[in-house]
Structure formats: C-alpha cells, structure tokens
Image (cartoon, rainbow over all chains, first blue to last red; front, side, top):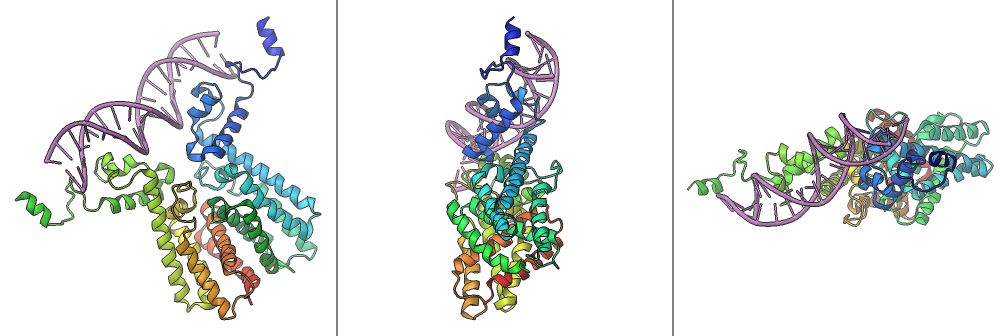
Length: 207
Length: 207
DNA sequence: ACCTGAACACCGTTCAAGT
DNA sequence: ACCTGAACACCGTTCAAGT
C-alpha cells in the first residue's frame, strides 16, 4: 500500500531512495555550480551531496565527470542553436535577421557563461568529443543564413558560405571570449563592440 | 671545504639538494606537461617528482598551483608581445606589417598551444589575475600599430584605435580559439582562414 | 534496476624538522 | 635560505553488498 501510494503520487518530496530524475538534476546542479564557482570547482562528490544522493549513485547515469561536462556542453550547443535560429527569424531574416543573430550569439555567451565556458574551454576536448567542436547544428544555422543571403543577392556569391561562416563565427566567438575574460567589462560593452564590429564586417561580405 | 667548493662551482650537476634554478625549471616542466597532456593533467606533485625534488620544495617558489599557472600565462603574454612586435616591424609596418602581425598572432596560438590555453582558458581568472586579461602590453602593440596607420592615412581616422584594436583582437582570437578547438584542423587551415578573413576585414577599416 | 558504504589511488597544501 | 617527510583534507572512481 505504501508502495502503491509512492508509485501513484509523483510528488517532489525528496524520497532519498528513488530520486525523480537524477540525470536532469545532476545537469542542473552542475550548471548551477559552474555558474557560481567556476568549472574547476565542480566536483562529483559535491553534486551528489547537494542532491542528497550517494556519490556512487551518480555513476549510474554518467560514466564519469567528463561525461557530465559533455552533457553540459551538449545542452549548451542545443540552446545556442535554437537561440540563433529564433533571432534569425525574429527579424525577418535577411540583413536585419543576420545582425540579430550575431547579437544573439554574443548575448548567449555572456548570459550562459557556464555553458559557454564548458563548450569552448577545451574541457570536453580529446578523443571523447563526439561532434566537431562548434557543434554542427549550431554552425549550420549560420551557413544556411549566409547561403540564403547569397541567393537573395545580399552577400557576395563568389565566397564559399562555409568559409564565410567560419569567418563570422570567429568574430563573434572572439568577442564572446574577450567578454568572458574581462577585456570587455559589461554585457553592454560587449554589445557595443559587436555593433561596431558588425558595421565593419558587413562591408567585407556585402554583395 | 666541501661547502666552499659547492658554493664556488655553479655546475649543472643535479645536486638533489640545491637545485640550480627551480622556478625556471618548474615553469618549463609545467609548459611541457600541459603541451603533452593538457592543463587538467598538470599536477604539482608530478612536477616535483619529474624535477627530482620534494613536493613541498615547490611552495618555496610559487605560492600555489594557481601562481604557477599565472606565471605560464605571464610568460605567454610576454612572448606574444614580442612576437607581434617583431612581425609588425619585419614587414616594414604599414599594411604589410599589419597583416604579418595578424598572421603571427594566429601562428603563435597554434604553435604555443599550452601557453595560449592557459592565457585565455579562464584558469587564471578571478581576483588573482593582476593585469587586464589580454595583457595590456601585447594589446598596446596592436593599438599603436593602428594609430600609426591612421596618421599615415592607411586606416579611417574617425574610429577610436582602442575599439578598432578590440575588434581586430576579437577576430584573430576567434580564429585562434577555433583552431585550438579543432573546427579548423591544421595550422595551414588556420592560416588560410586568417588570410580569407584579413581581406574582408581590411575593407572594413581602410581609409 | 537503483542505491549505499567502504576502499583505493590520487590530489593540493601545510608544517615541524632537518642541512 | 632551502629542502624533506609526514600528515590533513580533499578528489574521481570502483565494487561488493543491500533494497
């Protein structure tokens, strides 16, 4: 009977034995910790403790610490992808949409600092990394946007959209990293630098 | 007498008691280790062991691991600064010198991977960091080069050279990070991306 | 299936003690 | 001054054992 009740009610109460959704909770707790104390302060033991679960329980869901970090990076790339895609569409694509996308990229980096650091900090590096670094899906959004602008005569047609995309990615990624490292102090400064950059960049790719 | 001899002869022999120049040796060993196995594999104990010195001896020269990493970063920034300065001068400054400087930046990053990762990986982050992130000296070389080009009528005069420099830095830094993270595979690919980028970038800043 | 407790092999860092 | 040895408080990871 007690068992039946437990199975029926999916309440939040910390049962301490069966945790609701440990993988998701671990991911959240990892991001929270990184945001608060930095990646190097993330410890599996700490995560387990704060989640009220034994340390070895964690290994049931993630092979090791590396895997947890990979999951954070993966979530980040998925988030980034949808952020870019929405920005691109929100301004009706074309030139305004493209600028919005760039601004959104920089905003994502300075907002989701912890995700971004894990995504590009070289933590998930090595053989263990599954997808090409800037995750293809997120990168593809950029390539597509450039290709579309080429067919509309907004961007020079004689450039390879993939190489153009690498160029643009390098620019926004550079701004983002500088912002995270503190050369650019505030998010506002980061945005200002992006706006300045975008103007100069546009003249280099316009048809 | 034995003591006098020891004091007089400054030979290289590994005395095991008085190490020649432990600080320098530690720095070299740290860089070597990072190059080989990555920053996360750098351990003070390992450094001491490979240097044939007790672990606690290290603390006589660097306050903690963080301090050793800061030293690596500092050395990197000094190296980068002179690399940029030499490239700028080697091609007679002006536009060719500026392009050489950009190429040298990217080459530095892909060559001195370990230094670069420590310099910008957020490891030296936090309150402990003394200078503004991209070390002012290295950044200043870029600002000066732009200002000089402005007075020579090679670069638009109505832009703040500091903001221009941030823009350029973001671009080369972005390329460097992408190269380190593997989007751009080989050093050659990194250079190609730089060359492509530089053309498009130049039209955005030319007078 | 999912979790716990104890254990192993590592860290960074400190400190009394040696030369 | 510079170094050693032992110790402390932490890690990641594993594994037999419980429910």
